[in-house]
Amino acid sequence: MQYSFFLPTQVIHGENCVRDNAQLVSRLGKKALLVTGRSSAKLSGAWDDVVAVLTDAGIEYEAFTEVEPNPSLANVTAGGNRAREYQPDFIIAIGGGSPLDAAKAIATLAVNDIPADELFSNQFAQRPLPIVAIPTTAGTGSEVTPYSILTDPKQETKRSFSVPEVFPVIAFLDYRYTMGLPVSVTINTGVDALSHLVEGYLSLRATDFSSLLAQRGIELWAQCIPALKAREFSAEVRDKLLVASTLGGFTISHTGTTLVHALGYSLTYYHGLPHGHANGVLMGEYLRFTAQSTPDRVEKVLGWLGLGSVDGFIALMDQLLETKLELSEAEIGQYAQKAMKTRNISFSQGQPTEEDLRQILSASCR
Ligand code: NAP
Ligand code: FE
Image (cartoon, rainbow, N blue to C red; front, side, top):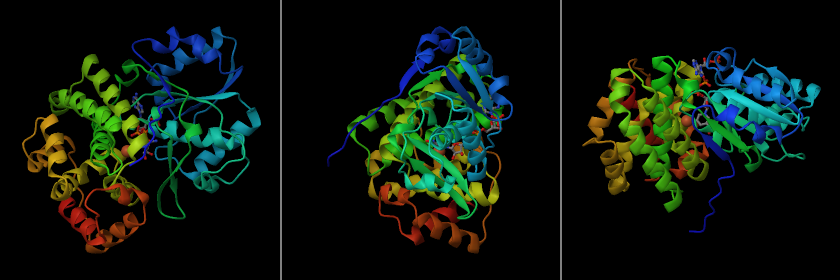
């Protein structure tokens, strides 16, 4: 198989890395648009660091602070309109995956006056503006991916667009911004990171390069299991979760995600389950299914996690994710049908059929 390996994002890691690397930001231009959710950018401390850097460098800025969780097309349209009025040279995204993904859409709409649903064409006349990404959750890895996942009410699901130009140019990883994350958000986002690492490792598109990153991410994540179970997070654990999450982003930027994400989108869209939680509910049965075609690789994943079996994995997820979801037969049929239409399915091992997806859903949502 031919493949390329491309990681264009400069990753700067460590405490205080934003303020210590102001010169990298000042090279990007004289006007910045900050893109954030409603409150966590400020609460995390990242906002103050960014504003200090911009002020010292004489960079003018404005902010779009209205990104909602699981941003919709209407939400990024509002951000795009703001950007076209202000005409920034670059975008600084601060937050979880939602503001980071919204920033990719806004960076594109800033220079392309198109309806937001045309983002999914992945073809733009003008190159999106450069993006600096500062994650405040340790989950999506969006700071190093070319994906932007948006909620499309017309199609009643989440859809993604992806072009290499929306890979952030710089990702600043400072675990201190994740110290105030509530326990439930820490766990849900942490499970999302794990799902990227595991799905990426088990993807049909995995390569030696992506698998190396996935393995290291899973090993780091495994070191955090005692803290995740105890629901107490030291600085060291926060840093490990953040690095594991970025490794997950690097992994899926090459492999894509698989059937877990494809099915999980319906659990989020129709039942409001946070994204990582939705993946965590499905991952155990996905491992059982995948072990039928790729037992060696599933065994490796379980081994790196220090778990002896798929049942052990499911017990861990049950312990971490407290709420359960029960689905009706009609819901199971509908979500399996929807997932079959996604590209993610074709990246899954074992050529899953619609019936396989129904079985995974019904065994997971019991
Ligand atoms: P999120 O939706 O960005 O944030 C969830 C909640 O956590 C929000 O209420 C947010 O508040 C809050 N929060 C964020 N950082 C915080 C902090 N440091 N302290 C306290 N609260 C904080 O969650 P996410 O799981 O990181 O992102 C999920 C989105 O990413 C989904 O749309 C998913 O589909 C997408 N995703 C993208 C990729 C990719 O490759 N691009 C991969 C996987 C998932 P505020 O609203 O105030 O910010
Ligand atoms: Fe995800």
